Length: 222
Figure (cartoon, rainbow, N blue to C red):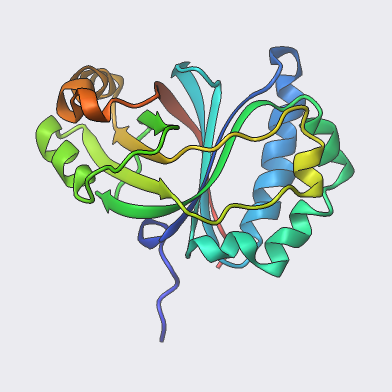
């Protein structure tokens, strides 16, 4: 009997950073958990979605989806959702702001647990990160409270503008790479954030970094 694909084995990632007006957060939250997450996780090849809220970052929200592979984001089933957004989605997107949205491939995930906190480094300029970076960072931090390090790289193929994207007030931006350090406790998160610049060095300094707490995790139905 074949094994159901596990999220930590995912080779594709959809990464999203965005802001949303604070006075509409209840509307935003209801849409995300009642419609958007179930809709996206119902697309074949989506394995898990995670939502984070900023502790200290340049974007309030950070969300990503584990995918069987990046090709899932070019499948007819997924593109049909993007080109036929619901009325609720169209209403939400009108106030969606400061968006980074990037199709990525997972280079390496070190660790299998999901931490309640994440230190997130984002590269926007072209950068060649070492393929073993996740292993180096995990070893360099040497902290039992760090349970995973994830390294992503943008794919050369990105989604073209869709009807959903066209409802957003500004064009989406792209990243070139990202590093996510997951921690069980805030003290480990803060230590990781302090150590990361030294571990990366000046040449690999990210264009932005932030600290986030996990607010929702949902698995795709099997």
